[in-house]
Each structure stands twice: as C-alpha cells, then as structure tokens.
Image 1 (cartoon, rainbow, N blue to C red):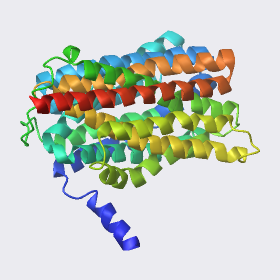
Image 2 (image 1 turned 45 degrees about the vertical axis):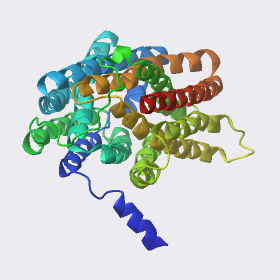
Image 3 (image 1 turned 60 degrees about the vertical axis):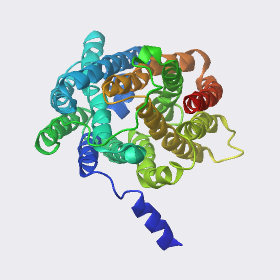
Image 4 (image 1 turned 90 degrees about the vertical axis):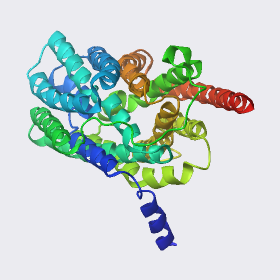
Length: 411
C-alpha cells in the first residue's frame, strides 16, 4: 500500500516541463523570504502603534497596490512579455522592502506599502502566462499546483523563521531578508528563465469564448464569486494573526508556526490530491468543495471548548482552511485559463489576479471593522454564512458552463 501511494505521489510530479520547474524554483526563492507580510498587522499595531482600524486602512492600501499591479502586470505581459515583467517586478520590489522599513508615520507607510504591492504584483499575471506557454492543457492544473507548492513551501519556511527573527532580533531584519530574496529571485529569472517565446503547445480552439473579457458574462460572474471568497480567505492573513495574539495570547513565534502549518500542509498533499482529482470532476466541482471547507473552517473558532480543547481549535481551523485552499485555488486558476486564449491570456489572468488584489483592499477593512464593532465571533459567523452563499453561486455557475458547452456541441 505504501509503495502504491509513493508511486502515485511520484506520478503527480512526472512529465512537467523543465521551465515549469524553474518557474517553481524562482517562486520558492521569492516566497521563502516572505517574512514581512504575514506579520505586517502585528508590526503595525505593536511596533508602530497604529490602531486596528488604522491597520485595516494601511493594509487596504496594500490591496489597492495589488489591484493596480495585477492590472498593469496583465497589460505589460501582453505588451512586453512575461520575462521582462517578472524580472523588473522582483528586482525593483526588493528595493521597495528596504524603503518601507524606514517609514514610520501613517501616510508614508500607506504610500510605500501601496508602491511595494503594486510592483510585487506585476509578477503574477506574467507567471500565469509563462505557465500557459510552457505547459500543455492536460498538464496545466498540475503545473499551477507545482507553482503553488513552491509558494506554500516558501510560505511554510518564511513565517516560521520570521516569527523567530521578529521575536529575537527585531522586525527590521524581516524587511532586509524579504528585499534580498526578491532581488535574488530577479537575478535568477535573468539567468535561468528563457526569454519571451511563443506558445509551445497547440491549444484547442475556443470559438465559444468572447474576444473581450467584458463580453464574457460567465467569466465576469466567476470573477465576482472569486473576489468574495478571496475576501473570506484573506482573513487568514490579516485578522487571524491579530486574533491569535490578542485573544488567544499566542506569541509571535507561535503565530509563525501556525501560519507555517498552512504552507507545509499544502506543500505535502496538494500535488497528489490535484493529480487524483483533476480528471474525475470538472474544475468548478472542486471549487465548490474547497469553498465549502474554507468558509466552514471559521466555525472552529466559535465552538465551545467542551467539544474540543481550546488549543486544538486554531489547528483544526488551519487544517480545514488549508485543505479547502488546495481544492479551491488551483481549480479556479485552471478555470480562468480555460476561458482565455493565446492572444488575451495576459489580460484574463491579470483580471483573475485582481480578484485577490481587491480582496486585499476589502478584507482587512471589513474584518477589523466587524471585529471592532461586533466582536470576533460575529466576524467568524458572517464569513461562514457569506461563504455558503458563494457555494450556491459556484453551483449556479457550474450549471451555466455545462449548458454553454452543450449548446456549442449542438451547433
């Protein structure tokens, strides 16, 4: 049995393009240095003395920069190609971490965190476009999962060490390490990633897909649903660290360990799980499964300690939301790919990236405001309830896509 599991695990990694592995490696280099963002809300409240509401607005500027960066990154990818966009995003982003470290007052922090986020998020549409170029359609979801494995493996390492560094030698070193790894990732792109090339794989012609995103009503509805569920998920990054520290009295190191559990769990099981699920159901079926798990995970925080020891509830939350993420994000990404073609992929993936960027604006403001006005329990209940509405929305979208395909096949 163990041999069979090992064989399946090995198969999930086989046959992928060497360039996809290089893209995963450069992503790992970058994300292994991700130490600032998971602790940014704690840094803003503890070190700079901002209130929770002010912190929410600052992180909303981070989200606004992400929106601008995702949009501009999509446009630049279609104009100058994935290579130049990725290189300059990494290289300039590293220097922005150094500059942000010296900002102390509210408005300068807001400005520089906006610029940092804008430059860093130029990378995402370029990365997605490169994945599409260097992987055939049949391997695309696995290729996305390999990139996500690198992201989450790095995210597992970064916060764990980041918490220890912040606890022992100070927050400033988090900015330094993040900046250095960004610059190094840019140099790795310049050294190892092939320059702009044409798509290597012949794709199925998608005559049913409109030429413009704004004519593709299915895709627009998909973007709306993805934005809402991303807002729910992003409470993990913004509100949960503060909740763990202020309400559950976790140390910064323990917050880092718990956040690392998310990355390590995804790195361990996402590839074989996606490989197993990919051909068994449609993308949107697994999105529905993942969305359900993400929104229900918040209910662990409101369970009575008579059912579970209180210290297990954050662990159960993290395991559930991580498994939900495994089902949700690779398959939303794959669905977004399926709606695009070689001519408009940068723009399509740019708008897909913007759903997460918009969530970065709304999530901290909404989360901290609800927690401040009504308490954390109401926040967790509202996230779960809204998420279940999104499950219904994805169910309706799945039926719409099935009807669309039946109509095309009937012609």
